[in-house]
Length: 160
Length: 137
Image 1: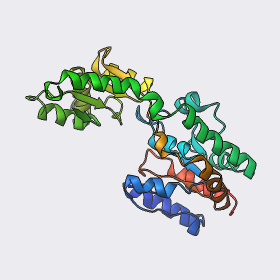
Image 2 (image 1 turned 30 degrees about the horizontal axis):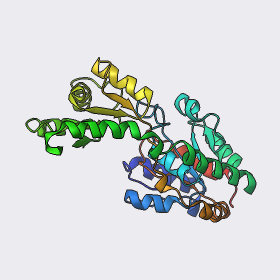
Image 3 (image 1 turned 180 degrees about the vertical axis):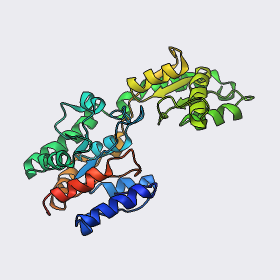
Image 4 (image 1 turned 135 degrees about the vertical axis):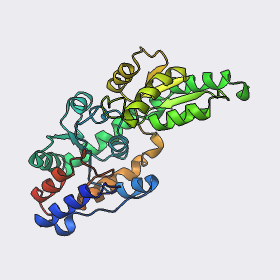
């Protein structure tokens, strides 16, 4: 785990890990600058997206989450909550596993499915990479925004 | 050109830009809690930013669901709103010939990685308990 915390949630998670005997299998690397996060997470086998659907921000994350698509871009399969938003956007993707919020057995099962063999893992990783390479990338979807930005800039006397 | 990243930045930018009228883009990365009451600061800022966004050149939302929420907040159809999905640049991708080695290494030294904020809206306990159910490999 990396990232900032409200304190209680992190200490609770670490305490839980200690109680169930995870030892060194669970660690928290603290807050790191975004650029370093990408280096650190590049070695991940599976990426985890763990938002509970408690508000509009977290019920509409499938096409908004930085971490989900940054994992995919680098060929890292991802486990995500089984919520309508993620299911609608990613339900047919083989590099995605779903888990039910509040049921860690489904999270473990999702990780095991993605890593059940090297061949299965490699196929999922390559699929994630290719999906971003071919369709789900900034360069593909940005031109309409760029056109609007250019029009806005041209309308500004400072830019003329 | 100015770009505001969330409701608080949008309101601050509107105030700062009142006299200069530099084109403003509202790129709404995170959208606030569901309709907080007007008397809360967050609720006020969200509603104000949503309505004031009509004066910006462009509002960018990352999903249709967020766009609908935004229109509801503003009580407006928002003709200057564009839904653009938050996909990463191809520059983030490793070169294809390096990917095979990365996949081998990732599979040999297995980890489940969560990068991000740890608060009560994150199912971190599910992850911790799931790790205990996975084989030690």
